[in-house]
Amino acid sequence: MGRDQLPEPKPRCLRRQVGRSLKRLRLSRGYSLKAVADDLGYSTTAISFWERGMRPLSIDQLCHLASYFRIAVVDLFDVTVDTANAAPCCILKPDAAPPSRTDHTESSP
Image 1 (cartoon, helix red, strand yellow):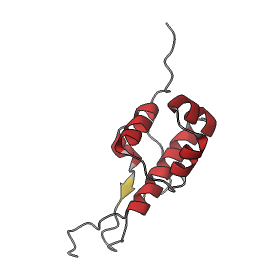
Image 2 (cartoon, helix red, strand yellow; image 1 turned 135 degrees about the vertical axis):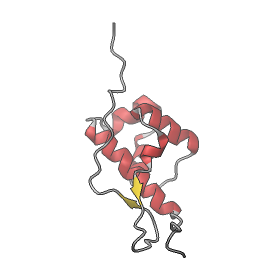
Image 3 (spheres, one colour; image 1 turned 90 degrees about the vertical axis):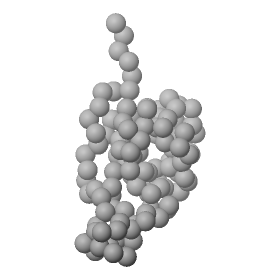
């Protein structure tokens, strides 16, 4: 692999990255697992599996989650690549703060 080429991320690594992002977003906003599951119409088991990187998400599910947290889908893949060491997979930014967005609930007029 040339120095200018980025390593191809592994699917399991991507699932863990998205899971960490989901959990960080959920906890930073004070949402319980049950509340997110109920709001989105998924089971708590599904949300838990996604947060732990144990199950892949479909594009539709990624879009649904990004919309719920009011972020871009790409923000779920909060990654940097260690090109100096040619890391075999993407590396989650350490202690990256979740994006600051407004709460997902609409205020009443």
